[in-house]
Image 1 (cartoon, rainbow, N blue to C red):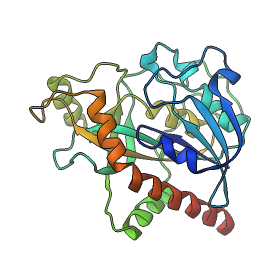
Image 2 (cartoon, rainbow, N blue to C red):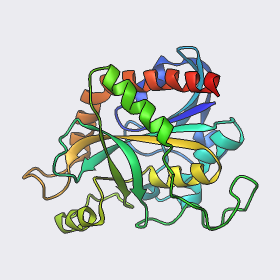
Image 3 (tube, rainbow, N blue to C red):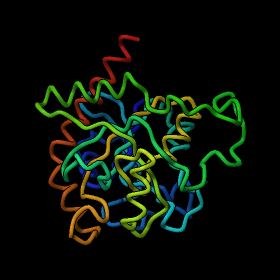
Length: 259
């Protein structure tokens, strides 16, 4: 089954699913409740264009005060209890790459997650996770990422590609931090996603990801950063983003048949 984590601006995609079942995150762990505007905090299970899918309508963030184990609990549930073997991660991000502009979409080709605790600390070893010192060289599945690129071009749009860096949040980064992250090779920055990708990859799931560049990062413009700005740009991009994700999900079904 395909799983998708719906970041800012994409939550409405869950409303397009032919729903079989809705599970609140609090149903699997009473301590879990999304506190971020626009994140409903639930699984929506059903079919989309004939494809079986489970969508996370909102996610759990580390900056909300949860432990890293709690942050990845919904991902673990999708994999172990719902049978997800392919995972699409989406998010809103600040653009660090100076060629990026608000409204761009970026395929995540790699990530930097050293600024938050590893989601694999203390994880019990299983046949899926294997070696404790898990190899992360190919976290983002090349075939799935190529599918996203092809589907976007079929819709008349060329996507960016780059490295995503996760911070703890909830404050935005300083201009000095952004300059440091750029020197490390980051193209975009946000407060989620990499830990979900790392955990899912360790569990043997094929992972791909797309960031919506909602703003230029700190120090790159005269504008102050705000969640409202992020939400507005994400919503404007949402129509195309949702169409792209629907086409990608259908493309994943074709890959299943091919395999």
